[in-house]
Amino acid sequence: MNNLTKNQLAALLLITDLFMLFCFCGSITIWSALGYAVGITAQLMLALPLVLFADRGGKTEKWAEFFYLIYLVLWGGFILNRLWNVCDEIFIPLETSGGIKGRIIITGFISLVCLYISSTGMKAVSRSAVITAFIGVLFLLADFISAVVRCDFSGIDFSADKSGFADGFMLCFSMGGAMGTGAVLAPLVSESCKKGALRYFTAKLILSCTILTTAMLVTGRIMSVTDFPVITSVQLSQPITNQRIDSVFMIIFAVFAVFSVTTQVMTGAYLFGRLFSGFTKGRNAVMVIMTIVSAFAVSVIPPYSAVTVTAVLVGEFAVPLILLIKAPHKMEKKK
Image 1: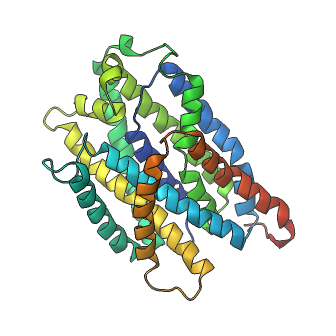
Image 2: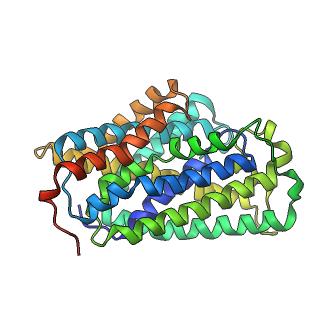
């Protein structure tokens, strides 16, 4: 696998973070949004061992690679499962197909695209991710400006009854599984990860607050009857008079979904190659199959639960900290 730049890694992780926010199901209040923002700041602090480990040229041990392989399979399954749950709200690609049939169609298309993109290599995917993330950010900013100009600020919910600070804080971690992917890819970054980490978390904070604020402004009064407030807010907001913005969003949503799943598949295939050196062909296909099976398995777990929070904390903080402590003599400082 070729080395990545800090901007390419940040783009890959941001796309997954934003996609998970698109798929968020629940209520958003000013307090939960604040908790989410504080959670991102906490993640930045917890990522310090990971950044130090990567910048000092640390090499991931076999046990950690096994852990992250399982982690990526489960996280990829979680992403696919979230996509399935959004099918009824924003179905791709056929409006008349829903339920199991729709899930099979979506899974089939994503699997084929994942396998095709995987054949181009991580370097090509990461370069494309930068362009994709940039276009997505432009769209989100346009949608946010439209929400601020046209919407009534009285729709923002200041009550902590439906979703409070603690809910938003926990939500940030349960939806922050991209950090486990970052833990695997960070040692491959050819530059110092310190500035890259700060840039990534700053962008994540700004964009997450933008999305949550847009959802509150547009769907504040109907939040109780809205399953997916972020998607609904995009459908109701029309910043471009001669073009339905939700049709543009569907394109971005589909591309972000493919990138999110593909990133987990390719990273997992990379670990397969490190763990099983003789396994040179079909690694991506195996990861796709395992991800689909995982998507069915994780459906029994509440999407925003202590299980997902714990997994993210272990992947982001605990494992890098153990690696950092155990093998300082094996590390060489990255230039």
